[in-house]
Length: 315
Image (cartoon, rainbow, N blue to C red):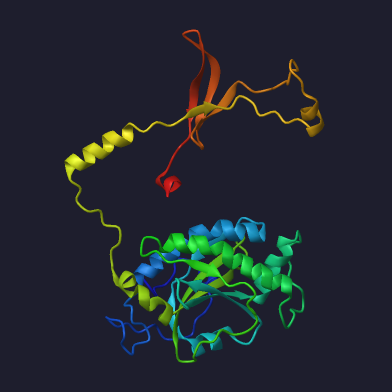
């Protein structure tokens, strides 16, 4: 549930000394949070956390643990007070086709650590921290926002189709133009290497940006399967089972220098080397491995191992 305690230890939680969000049943009221308990958005964040892991793994050049914290609703002024006066990166993204903006919020130390790791360093931030961001840091923040745009769209897909796009050239050291009393939904993600102290990344959704999607956010259950007509299902199953896929086996993929390639002539021999087992592919996906041999006088591959597939592989 939203605002319920996380199952993570208290050492991995950033303190939020504030009252819980107030709830109201409908949009357009004076309540700080007009969307109810926001459990749907919390599930969306949990789904998004899994997709953010490879993004931050690549930026930090490390294997991270990534999780979603319980979200909260705050007035913009309260959120700013909570963060203090330390240098912070405010990278905007567009949400949808209008003027709605959300904010990717990163601590300066965390951003500069990623910048150092990105360029082959040990992931160390300068000490003391600078008072403003360099062009390289601004470029990395925009690149990171661009990298999370697709996972954001995929996470929102079960609710509604909405496009996200990083705004390049933004002055990430400048506060966004949000009125002090305007409420924002704070979705927070923890990132940690092993048992080290985690860093936190926030994605802020102004309530005004979420109002066009209020109907999707207030629905309690998504993706309930509708009753399907048996005859239609049987026809669809027969049609799907008749779809043909190409199967191929890759015996070898030799690599030769360009000079040798240009000198090749008819009759030349290119040596190849392959083991007893070769990969077997269906379309562009690996089906498994097999042994090369013959059957009924024709070359054949006997399958020795099949790859395991999960439902997530096809999403």
